[in-house]
Amino acid sequence: MDEDTAPGTAYRWSRLADEHVAAWAELVNHLAVVDGTEEFLSAEDLAEELHTPGHDPAQDSWAVWSGDTMVGYGLALAPPSTDHEGLARGYLGGGVHADHRGRGLGSELLDRLEPRATELVAQRHPGVPGYLSAGGGRQGSSAQQLLADRGYDVVRWFNLLTRAVTDAPVVGPVEGVELRSPRPEDEEAVRLAHNAAFRDHWGSGQQSPEHWHEHWASRSSRPAVSTLAWARDGELAGQVLAYVMVGQWVDREAYVTILGTVPGARGRGIAAAALARTIDEARRSGDFDVIELDVDSASLTGATRLYERLGFTHKHATSAMRRPLPRSS
Image 1 (cartoon, rainbow, N blue to C red):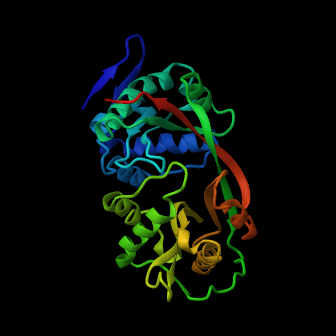
Image 2: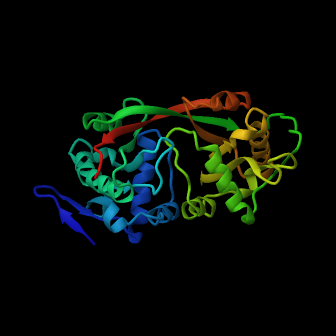
Image 3: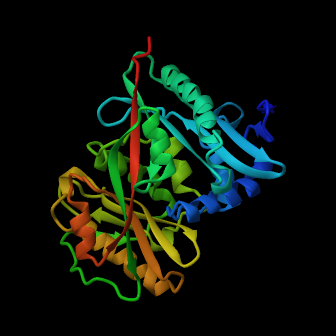
């Protein structure tokens, strides 16, 4: 394991490893509170994240320690696919404990992560123009300021919407469409539908079977309250037209991880019917009090209007930030 101590400081640096997930979860959940993002994760969730396909924690991660307490962490990722515009993507994630900010740890993390993410992008997409992307948090956050100082710009806002499940919206049936919960054998059909649905969505790339399986089979997945819309007839008969996939990271809270409609089925109210079913299933289960989702504030499909019609209200917004990369050779 790589490990070092910066001269003149009491901080120790190491790579993230399986034995660190409890300390990592404590830090992540502290950040979710102090930064107001509510992005809570358990040690078990982070153990899965540490072994995301294509991610090597021995090269692509850092942890910062003060004694036995993790006070900072960072990850570098580069998906195997380009985004919808054909651009290569490098992602940076991380954070610093509120009590240890203002000491240069965030800058040092980025100094270590940016070259690695750039290297990964060049390896996986040689000669392809691309960018580095990182979450900027809520308006005025310290992360947003740090990234702006390093040349990142806010390129998108994502709204977190919430709704109680004490009642379900009334949405009529859609002719020729069957709604039901996903089954294990539906995995590939839903992956193909997702790739079709998000082919024109900002920042999205095509999902490989390996990466899709990680999402499909994750411990946070809640298929019992998820919904698939299948075509009964017509030229799309037997295909998934829309899907609402739900996960859970917080007690009593359902979260819509992905929702989409294939282009040929848009404008028929299928997504609304599928989401209404999911809300009702969450209510009927007795396991949830609220359901939440994030939506691109500039969505081309008018998703925000759909969610508002179904009773969702705005909770807060977080930013996505980017810095272009020089073309690799």
